[in-house]
Picture 1 (cartoon, rainbow, N blue to C red):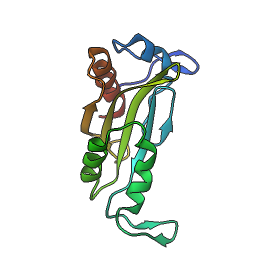
Picture 2: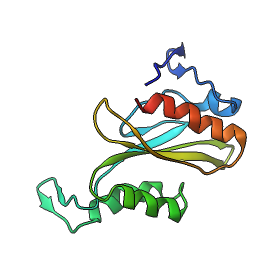
Picture 3: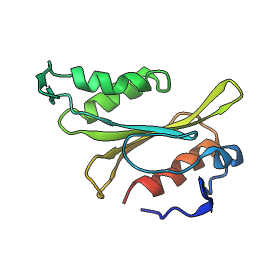
Picture 4: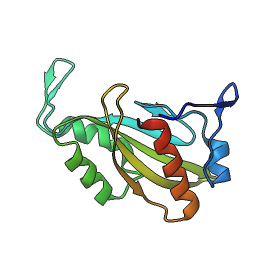
Length: 145
């Protein structure tokens, strides 16, 4: 896992080819995070049913976790994430920034949810420019071992 270097107290150094994204990202970290440059959340397994003392039907908790990603990801990615998190909870990341009111989604990454052993499961390059691909390639270094 690549160590974060700080430019100032609340902005990390990020070395992708996308200069606008590099200025927007504050700090990449694992787990449930909302940042100007990315959004991430644990996605519970399809088979997980227990939460806060209540029993839910299979898939309910997973659908709840994926709800906040629906505006960022195409349905085929959501379907693939559901399949990849069928038996085990994982972490889903979306790397994006805003250009005025326009949302720029570079891609998404799925890693294992094992504390301090985050391994890459899959990456989706959603904006097929070489700059956006470099954002995802660089981000993977910070969130996986």
